[in-house]
Length: 245
Image (cartoon, rainbow, N blue to C red; front, side, top):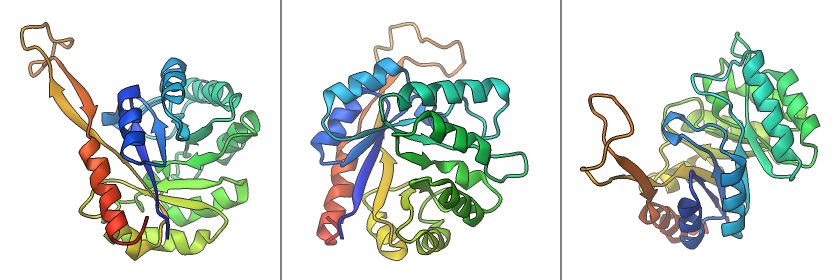
């Protein structure tokens, strides 16, 4: 069994580290601490220029959930059209107030990006019924779902991940996400049957303490994030030792 590994990245440096460590692909986003939002087209182009592995793009206009009003929908669809013009894989998702899928919006995304693979992302984990979301995605022709099984982590969501895998069959790829690391990746794969895992690999780095912090909060500091290549290598090695690569 060949388990694919995708790393969520917010910079060219992270994408290069992911490729160097052996990852199969990257998902480009910004503001990872919030769950990620749509990155700039400049960043996406820079990442795609820097690495040879495939890159998907997160299309999420704002934080705070997945129920979008007209301005956010406008932004989401415009970004989908721009990135879809390059046939880049799009990672997106939207819900209605009752927690069900916003099928009209996903249908519009597919219409604006007909050559792009569409992933319904972790909006499914905020839904009232993940299995109903899967059924709707299958009907809409969504090729891939990114999920923790409706839980805070993929380990906790193993029972639902297993159900989603069984229901999806060969019609839709289910990728596990949420707290995946070298210590749990084999357990998640072997107990759910997923053939793809997704995680971020960053470490926080404090910069020159003599510089002015670019935030006025009481706990503000001048910092950045750097790639955690060791985490990626750890996941890859764990899968390899288990015969999953």
